Image (cartoon, rainbow, N blue to C red):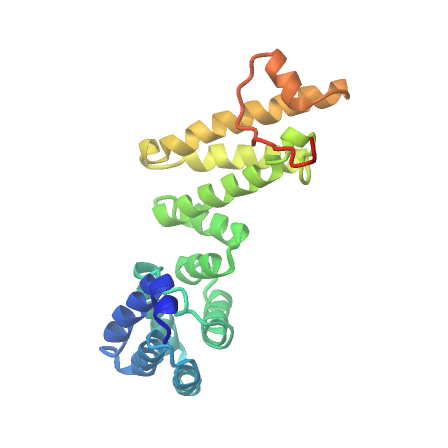
Amino acid sequence: MAAGMYHSNRRNFEGLDALAEELRAHPRLRLLGDYCGLRSRGLRRQALAALEQFLKLASEFDGPEARAAAVDILELHDRTKEAHQFLAQPLRARFLFPVLETWMEDEPGSITPLRWLGFLKHSDHLLARALAMAPDDLPVRRRLVERTLHHINYATHHLDENFFIGSVDETVEDLKSLGTYIEGAPDPVLFAAAAGELRYFEALVADWIAFSREGAGSFPAWCAERKRKYRFAAKYDYGSS
């Protein structure tokens, strides 16, 4: 492996090494440990062969064994997120997704497959369902707060150009959802920064709605006239002078 590649991806490789050691301690996950060890050394072809062996073995797991293996894999990944090459597409598509989806169908009242599938699929809908079932699940609440803030920020990040991305009504609903997620936290102090962002975006969107009703001019100039202070990105003119 080239030295430059190792140093630029060092945390990933170190995470894979740590995972390899832990996975090899699980008899049914030993081949995944081999995958991680080979992947950390840059031996992609051999690593994928080990992964294929694991997937063939896993296809013979019974229901409880498959579920236990899926949870073990996901919990290990959750503790070693820097190893971004761990949850490879074949592992997700051919093992984790089918196991979790079948589990959800068989046990619709179980939060375990719901929350993990929500994390894996980046699904606000599944995560919101999981939070409704377990309001004290802080990782789920935190992920929903992060994702909802991302949606709001994305929708508004071109307002300095008088351009709102998507639907204002949907963003207003996102703001309401964000408030609900923050207010429902067992300890609201944990989301104090997010609460500040909520107030900021509530004011920003309210001003955009008011500006839009007037229908003319520049939104940043409109805000400046009213002494509003928003985080508009600086723009530079690189044209010839």
